[in-house]
Image (cartoon, rainbow over all chains, first blue to last red; front, side, top):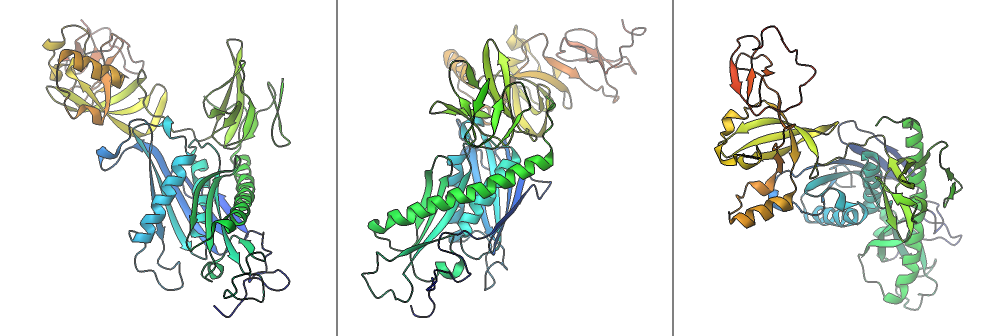
Length: 261
Length: 228
């Protein structure tokens, strides 16, 4: 895998970040008026829209309803213009279904599902531009949309990726470089596809509980800890950014002291 | 009373409310502090589940910590609630309704419900004719029935549960205050209740049979001069 180094001699990555820096996150809640909750999130060049409907009566197959908790229905979709080459099938292909099911598992852990039995919550996520960390951006955007919809959550659930990069000026052929490895937080597309193992983690940020952990390539257990620590720290940092955005939104909406009820 | 929080914000009861986010620790959960709506308890602390403002309400010598958000629309019918529903379809065995309001809260989306023949009245359940109790487009007040109770009753009577019952909410009007509140006559005019079982059209003076609720709606003008 010759070519570029993920990390230069000065410790800078391809886009000028340090190894523990996240990409710039810009987000906005309540971008649409039709869904109950919506949000738009940009994490570097990855741009994602999320919309939440619910809780409402189960649509479609009645057999799917759960008697003691809410049914969380997620759909992950990528716009045809989101990737370098035009994407033929925006949703319904294997990868989208797998992502949808991961999102569903993530949010079943975060939402207080026991409050709405026999009902359904729909979460739709659309990736407008994919530049690495798609799943993470989707989770972060959907968390904001759920907060906007007023659906009770245990905590914020945030997600972050980590790439274990070889130290500069070496190549992957050298087996002994595990000590010098550096975990790069919030990987972009180029870093993800460089061949280094990528760890994607979704966590309940305040309590540090893991919700989802995914590794695409082979990663030895000894190297797992370092990557996991960095990823959890990344999740906490994302949580702080999202928290600020939610508080700004609350302040703008205007919480009146004498609320009607 | 002052509760210290994880960040620099301080929650003082009785003064301005605190704006909180999901997962924010509000206070200790002990004998005097109970978690109310919009909060949950975990490992001895009370956390918020919504993004909104946290309030402390005094209730029976203890404090209930609640969180209210600006778009609180997520309400689901629970057994025991009084709901306002519109009748959609009437059948000799049951009638199908759409729940429009739960208590005082108007729903953004209606929920489907079923009102069975046996639940219309408390006495003489087998002498009921559904078409003489409800007609399509009637607005009724009903109570959401507890699901477990229905299943237990059926079991004791040895009757097979019809499969349609478990797919919608079950309603009951077996009380004096429940039943038809607003109904329109065949002439299209809102009718006035004249007895437990009849309503009269003020335009054509035709009487139509309904299972009338004891509550007289304020908006319907009562024409005293022409009522018998």
